[in-house]
Image (cartoon, rainbow, N blue to C red; front, side, top):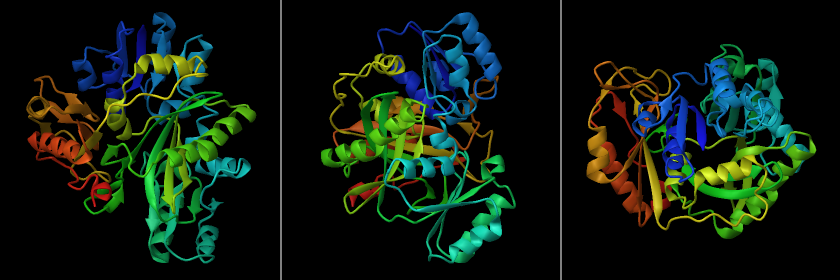
Length: 425
């Protein structure tokens, strides 16, 4: 099968790495891809999220057997719809179904319509009204930009002053651009956060694993929210009973609700959950694999990923048995550029990446890199590498991943030293 992956981050590199293991794969093409995907032997189109016309034109001529859309941006812009109209098989939801992620206000209203447990909320376009709403409860407050903000449009405000400043940043200063046309203020939910994934074919959902991510930039869960500084799997708090409850009360009602409202959901449904007193409540939905959760879960998956994605995209999950997983644990450490997430330093040289993989048996996923004309690997984004390792248990996986991360010679980068701390203490 000829497969096109749209995207060029760590999530897409992990998808490419897993798809390359499929005996059915004959050609892998990535748009735009990255140096790590090129090292796998993938053909790079050199254009992707910012070049949809090029992608559509290439697909119309080359007719890939499957298109896998990795990031939320192309889904939000309706790339699935355009490719489906060409008669192509696409893994990824339609533009209408992607609203579960692209608009937090849409998602909250959808949850209310379908009795999906989540935090109370209010939506505002006017800053004075939003600030007045704060007086109806006490801190902490959860302040969110309504649209897509690369995982950075959320502030957990510990005071009225901090909450007011967050509202001003979103609505007045337009820190997140068009994503900040509305602000969503939510009830703060205490508990432990976990990411749950389900493979969906429009009618049915299949549990696709759970992982725990670390959003804050620095050790001790300090600093601003990021797109994710590391993750581990499986999640020890997701017991079989809790998985069943999550599927029954959150995933399946969402899938049924989207179908009933005329927007059937096909792809990966990612439910960010807060677990409190043994009960799951939805923080938010995403409509694609998480990053770095994807890099963490796929190394544990004992399945032909290509076959799974084709089955889901074809609407044929009915009767599919529960997925098989390797024993043990998986951990991913994200190496980010100094200054991330506010103003990452770009262009610095990374050395020792291949040595890290060889010496410690880790898998290195490229998230934001490029090679210059001399072959040097350079930072091209905020999150630059993901170092993944699997082990007999979480401590072993983390030890190996950290050994690999420390092997990379990169003065221009940093990483958290406490990934997995909740599970280990």
